[in-house]
Length: 337
Length: 178
Image (cartoon, rainbow over all chains, first blue to last red; front, top):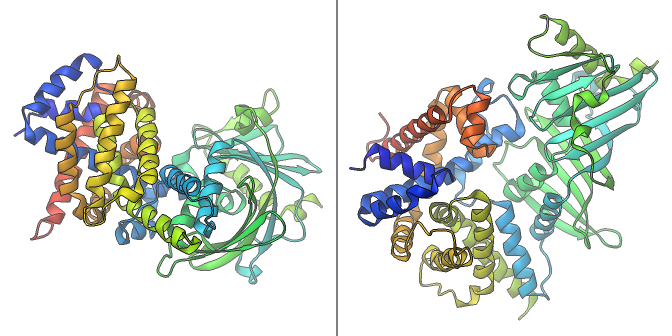
């Protein structure tokens, strides 16, 4: 039987929060208690499983884990004992490539190298093209005519998309804390914390933004990959979900990866919702450059005395602004005329 | 060596590593205190494993071999940081590796059971787990975010982990849950 105090200290140790002066005592207790060593092994393993649990998947894909039915993303965890840890896999692949220099890279290795490159780069700017699905009447993301030009900057899960319209700037983004925000004029803005993002806003976010790291990890884990040389220096990767993997928000995915730098030059994704294709979205890399943290913050795009609507604002005002924003994002041509 | 054979070797190595990686990470987490150091050491272990893969004797469990390599990397890590006390002696590291190898086969059912147990947790507990494990927040940051104290968050997390561990054991018991 291990005392609760010792169990809690072992937890603290695994959390990296045990005071140094307690190290010697802890070692003494571990030396004298095989049970404590067994507990430490179990607990370390539990921590590792928690870090790989689908709670993290839910965070990556949707901020509404509680409001969803048990999601399909769990299935891959249940079905496989081989998990992907991007960093270590990349290490293995790079090491093995170094050891075996004559080897031909497989599609997975191209994707792994792209993942490694993506993790070392901060901010990327993309041009975005959306091709609506064939059934526009039922498609909430349809666009009437070409939308206004937009700039999409991405840093991990943070992004900012700036549309130039005749009325002024339509800007929206996700900040470092995970809040989604937008402003349609610069005179007022609205912000939704990660745990209160409406589904409609989340859907638009899924469609129009690119979390490259999440995408590449998902391809390595859940997709069958094929590669073929495209033009000079570019490898084309085509990905389809593995049979039985239905949790993905993408169906077919195409990547163009620059062989020399491992940069993903273009990503074309067939976005699906409830099994239906909603659009084919292409992201073309235009620039890689370091941006200020403030690039991803709402206040950067607001006029000095602008009002920020959040959960504490008068009921309904933020929703009105959201309706206006969604209207402008979904049907930009209509609004410009 | 032909390139097809090389690809085959690399694929085998990657597959074996992926199967062992959770246990390697658990091992390193139990032996080294800070997250950044743990990540560095895991990378070192992966590199060592890749360099020495030819030495691996397939008649032995891969995890035992890779944890043996990991033990050396952990000892090297503490040697390179002479001022840092090594909380687990060489003997303890060996005992810990033994325990992890024993449980290697039931990792997959454990992961499955954990998913079901997580679903039964109250939302607030799931949020705490997410903050700790997926957002990488420290106890103090979590306490600030939820307007609590570090001690309270620590104890709550301890209880959640205890309840998850018990739930997993119940689900893995031959007679099943409840």
